[in-house]
Image (cartoon, rainbow, N blue to C red; front, side, top):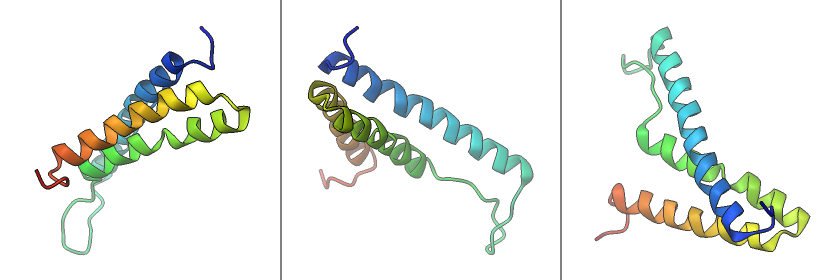
Amino acid sequence: MNKNSIGFGALVGIILPIVGFGLLLLINLILQQFELVTKNGEIFQISEKTRVITAICLNLFPFQYSQRKRWDYMLRGCGIVTLFLALGWAWYYGLLGF
C-alpha cells in the first residue's frame, strides 16, 4: 500500500487512537492495582474522557511525520479521521451544546 495515500492516513488515524486508548486503559488499571490515594481519599484513576482525548491526540505524531516527509495525502486522511473522532468525542461528552 502506498504510504502517501488518503486510505493509509485514515488507517493510521484509526489504529493509533485505538492502540493508544488500550495502553492508557492498561496504565489506568495498573494505577488502580497500586491503590494510589489522592488528597480527597479517592483512588487515583484517569477519567474516560481524558483517556479518549489523549488517544485522539496521539494522531499528532503521524501528522508531524507526514508533514516532514511531505506526504500530503496521508496527512489529509489522518486529519479527516481525527476531525471526526474529535467531533464524536465532543458530541458524546456533550461539549457541542446540542
